[in-house]
Amino acid sequence: MLCQNCKANEANTHIKRVINGEATQKHLCSSCAQSLGYDNFFSDFTFNLPSLFSSFFDDRNLLLGETRADRCEICGCSFEDIIKSGNVGCSNCYKKFYSKLQPSIQRIHGKVKHSGKVPPKTAEPVVIKEKTAEEKIEDLQKEMAKAIETQNFERAAAIRDEIKQLKGEN
Amino acid sequence: MNWYKNKGNEGDIVLSTRVRLARNLTEYPFPIRLDEAQRRDIGNTVKEILDTDKTLKLNFIDMSSLSSAETVSLAEKHLISPEFACDTLGRSLLLSDDEDISIMICEEDHIRIQTVYPGLSLEEAFETALKIDEILENKLSYAFDENLGYLTQCPTNIGTALRASVMLHLPALNKKGAMQRLSTTVAKLGLTLRGSYGEGSEVSGDIYQLSNQVTLGISEEAAIKNLNSIAMQIIAQEKQARALLIKDEDYLDRIYRAYGILKSAYKLTSKELINLISYVRVGVSEGILDIPAEKLRELTVLLQPATLNAHSGKILTQTERDILRSQKVREELA
Ligand SMILES: [Zn+2]
Ligand SMILES: [Zn+2]
Image (cartoon, rainbow over all chains, first blue to last red; front, side, top):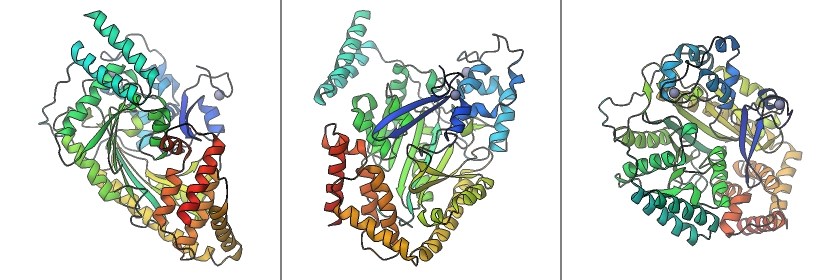
């Protein structure tokens, strides 16, 4: 996607804010974002500053010599994907690209070693299992009733289609 | 305690305190890589775990079941982020009746525990967030690394993944031209001080947010303590500056005029309201006007465009909203 302002560079800064009762999005390149005053991390009072993470990578050499094999085995994300989006793909990416991420992490935080709360090792993780088609249909039917109640007919129609599709699969 | 219906500590200057903990699960990629069904599964799992705690009583909201006015209204009240309001597919929210706890599912991270308190209340807000985190951590396997701490979709949040902030009303320091210097100073201390911007580059309503920036290599307690002590210093400076400011007759005149417009205008835009209330708030804190601080806060929050639409149950035109807004203000200040 091209920057909405200069229409030349790739948009890598996505600004979401609420203006006059509407949730709006702007897609800008990092230089336009800065010149338009959007380099402000907290301008909309949220805690999100992902798009600006890429600006911490001034060393583009990190990308040289990257091959397709350099992808996270879990989520398929490459280091280039991380730089472009400013987002890491999954927790395994941090292991996979640790040495490449480390310099920018140090630049952001000044430190590289966590000090603070540690989750208990004894945690017995619940295994999140996929719901069965019947359970999903049941959920959707409840939701459809709610949508009709709130006169959100567009949503209700979309749910109806979803239910149809699920039933078709059986 | 609802943040816009109660005054709270230092409530003449501090509008709210927010604390956010970001958490992710090991079994899933980060939210940008999740489909709708996976997002729903995470929401349902978190709901089931939190339902077992009888003291919390959180309402589970499927974001796609809300009208767009309702969604944006939540963002106007700072209960969700604009980012969360832009894309509601598969996302859900757990919200307490008092709106002091709001847990966003699959925003930028799988779980974002947020607490909002009136006034300056960092420790309480942190404790409440921690309590929820402790319920969840016993049942979920969090993405965590010994060196990097809690892992988050964006590396700016790793470590404690704690972001704490106080929303400050600083008209006197702003009038003095002290904001630039102040934000440079706090930046050196690992904090950020930023203005609330409307459409352009001017700060609307003299409202600023002070928050911690660094999350790796500093403990939660130290971050909270640090933020609290800097906030206290800024509050003290603002108090001093306000006491001087009201000796200025031109400024006094502005306070009275702002109050006059609020009490008699037939139409008020939300921007106008915020700017006028900024003056009136100084009048209140300095004992010139007698209006409860929380009433002013409630007006600025509940009379925002989407919140007005959501309350009236239909989409009003801008003019209809401006008329309705001034009516409510007149009623409240009568
Ligand atoms: Zn551009
Ligand atoms: Zn990955």
